[in-house]
Image 1 (tube, rainbow, N blue to C red):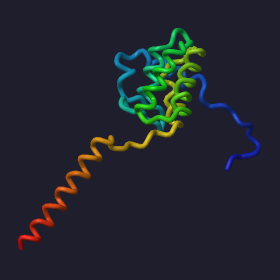
Image 2: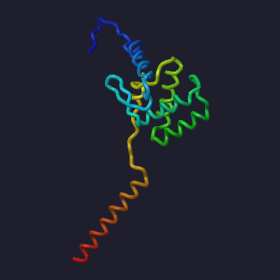
Image 3: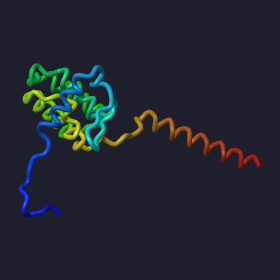
Image 4: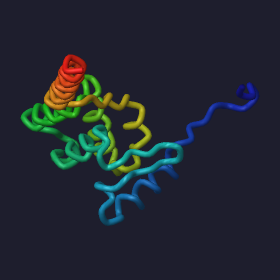
Length: 145
């Protein structure tokens, strides 16, 4: 519980941005795992992948409508919902507008729910066919005995 005598204060500004600028200067920063205290996004995290693609498509802090449509389609293929994909785009655009690095916004991206990983439809079909073939084989063996 917070002490009522002390005023609230914002804790994110100067140090977080400085850390973000240092990270942005490192070679290979965009493709590697990015960490903030208590938060990690890996290079294959759909939120991070989409954020990097948005940053590449930006012209300053502006995003052309055709690029937005392509990025939303990419978000759908990575199982991000339309709201979440638009939120990633908004976070990246806002950081670009304020002149901040993308790697400093990891905490914001981490607030977006990570999409659930599901097996592609083709893989599920193979699993069911394999289980069916196995069951048929067991029935055949039992019938022979």
